[in-house]
Length: 459
Image (cartoon, rainbow, N blue to C red; front, side, top):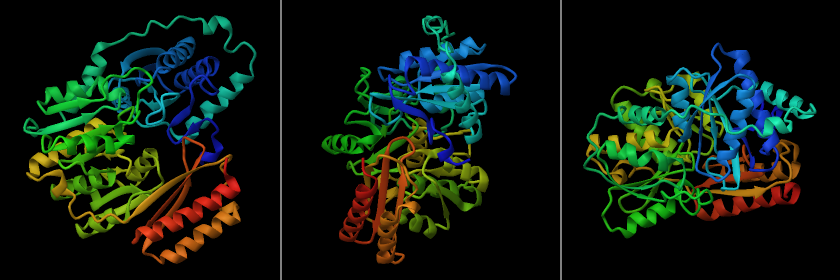
């Protein structure tokens, strides 16, 4: 099912500006009803767990969605502020038919989103999302589907099980056997969902952790911090002058993590894939000696993996598509440059920033090598990603000027670099990515393609 056939669901649920369609008081209630109907239709036990991030609008959107679900007979349980992978874990381990997360991940605080996991902890299939969408649009056409009575329902008395978050933290802590107490780590929680779990998790494992950006006020999520701004963490570690062995930083809903070494140099998802792939390979746990990355992963990581006898397969951007490819190939490791890493040697069904942080620390401790040493041979091709705001997402193959610019760049690179031009799954943006052996060539080719898009499709 192609992404184009769905109007509300993007690569990661339904996203938008909180208070505007599709995230108004009326539409979020109707989304809840449509989701609820889907559960009642497709599952034996219509129980759902709901979690949210720390942004200002997450509370009222959670209320509306929960009210809609409750109105059609779904038993909704709240886990409060919790990471996205925390909800996926609870859905699959606690017998819920679905997990619903209210979060817009790395987007600004003014945005929000609704993402859904089925009872097995996997994101919904495109087909199921499409069926839910059809019902949402049908309800929107129906007068009184979200009448005042429905919208005035007080917050449903969600059974707020304090044990839910605790169960998730305990499962993470139990996934690592190494003694991490010798590690000194600076942790940036992005004023987001990780604030609710990271201090407790790292404390239980006796990691010598110092935390920054752990005071969410509803508007400061991702602001100049977190995985969106890893340079903030890098600078803080560098300025501490050897006080920390490494730094880790999460995005707003903590389904991804980025790192920096003891000198403050950023290590992105490509570096994490390289060091964890080699570790899994050495322990005979890298199924098929294969790693799934995306079209955005640097050529440098592909070359380094190849030297270790590991094959890299590329999927479309989006952890949902990485996971699809992993399930198809049987791979135990996959991920994105942005820090979504999926470990299938355990029972994870989605990227989990907290789990990724533990796995990286575990490799450091067991290998006796620093993070810098573990990625020292990763020679990164200069890569530039330029975003261009667009008024509509017309397939690039249908825009001759853009197609010509892309083909000209590929001829110029002649196999020593890559061009990837795609639309964002969550925003009205075209993303132009060029990798080349020289900085100069990379800048020039990126600018030419971006200009062609701006002229023909620019907002």
